[in-house]
Amino acid sequence: MLIKKSFLILVGLGCIAALAGYYYVFHAGERNAANEEAVYTLSTAELVNEFNTDTQKANAKYNNKTITIIGVATVVSATEIKLDDQVICSFQTATTRVIANQKTTIKGRFVGYDELFGEFKFDQCTLLKTDN
Image (cartoon, rainbow, N blue to C red):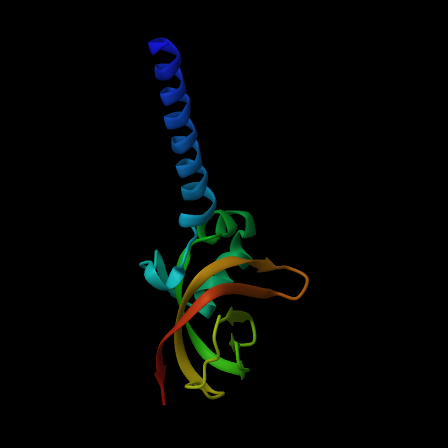
């Protein structure tokens, strides 16, 4: 009888540990680039140049990293800002402090380069600075 109780307790503890691990991996570990330090800080021209030089190397270097990107806002909508007609920064909430032709610094997660349109995409963006 004691062995059976011990076995049930161990199985119960194992189930709790498995559920806690599942929660951490699939829910608690979600990224929020706003809370992360930027790994790189560069201008849109520098980003474009690296991809023009070696797309595969640049993808490996920047993909899924939090980056601070600096450029001139060329297109501004409620939840997106396009820098220098090539870098698309997506925000989770509306951003209203940026106007077109304004130098802008944005931090976000680099999610990829679209070769077809020649665009660089960032999500989870945060506006850091604008210059008049």
